[in-house]
Amino acid sequence: MQLQIEKYIDGVRWVAASLHIDQPTKGLASSCTLEYLPDYVLEFLDRSDEASLDFQHPLSFHHYRCDGWPAFFLDLLPSGYGRDTLLTLLNGSARDGAKYDASVLMHGASQPPGCMRIRDAHQYLAGAMPQGFGGWSEAELAEVGTGFESLLQEHDVLHAVSCMLGQAPKLWMSRAGNGRFYPDACLAEDDITERFLVKFPRNREEQVLLEHEFVWLKLAKTAGLEVHGQPFMLGSLLFIPRFDCALVQGQWQRHHLMSMYTLQNAQQHGLKLFHEDVLTNWQAHAEPGEFLRQVTEYLRRDVLSYCLKAEDNHGRNTAFLKHGSRLQLSPLFDFSPMFLTRDPPTRLTSWRSFTVGQHQQWPVLFEAFLSTLLGEAACHTLRTSMCDWCSTLAEVQQQFAALKLDERTDACHKRFVTALAALESL
Image (cartoon, rainbow, N blue to C red):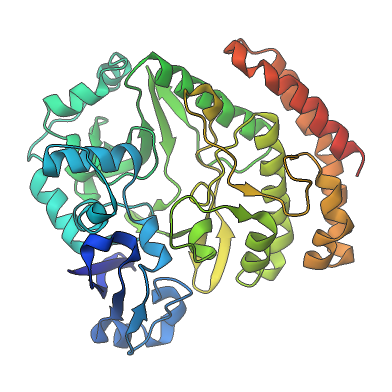
């Protein structure tokens, strides 16, 4: 199987490279060949960092032989609800396994977050979406309740979810100049004024989760964390403004988004990571003058995620914006109280420096790891910054205590106390 990878640069979708998968039925484990197209290489010889698909496979006239799929393809590969829906649309069943990976990539990687896509998948989605769909008004979406999936089926636009990553039901949705909302694939770029990730519930349990995720995002903003734009709810739908693309002088630009898993060159799903390894590898690609500020944000996210039990921290729930050879921590996303679900995920990224099973020992980081990573002076600055943040975290604690939430969130009260005590001991 041979697929073409497109990358968005300077307002143009460039056919950047080809991927030849030797044994598609082996899925991610199949050996493959990744090769940049000569015309693309020639076009961007003087901008090779920007044009490269990742750090492991820099722009080159030579091909790359790989034992398995390069890690960045997993950032393009639909998963969860999107994958299940795509397989059902393709095969009449959500029956899954490694042998379907290549087909899911070929048909589903049409609109991944960021600036890359599989050309074949884009062509498939374009052919599957109806022409002339009239979109929805705010009032219509506000009244949909838990029936949005049925609404997608009714208008024959269910394919819009087939490109999405993550377990929860979601899709890209855009607002047009006429004020109505459409699945992103239904609109031409010039017609789009705003872009959102929209999460929708299929039942009351998922609706409760989204209502709480909205609160969690507002609490993160109160804590001073970087939450892009202003998330909002229309009825039961959670609208989250996209940060992987931006309207610049009337033209949509797309940013290169790289997951923490891709930074760590993780070629499988669900691998456990250590924060220390992530920070060390990130530092090699960080803007030196910005790294300390971003590590501060990273550490504060870790503390607040502990307080609010937002523990679904696998390697695709943290990402970086790639600017040439530099990486910048992306705004916060997927900050959700997944412990409210029937099958809550376990924490997959932890601190090697902490005692196994413990996740509130941040003072230990300042004794060795952070001083080695940052140097003594910067480590002292970080320590002071975290201490100063205690008053802000205490405000979040007070705001949280005043909220009327699901009783299962009561466990978070003790966590705030524990976290504040740890930070005050720095």
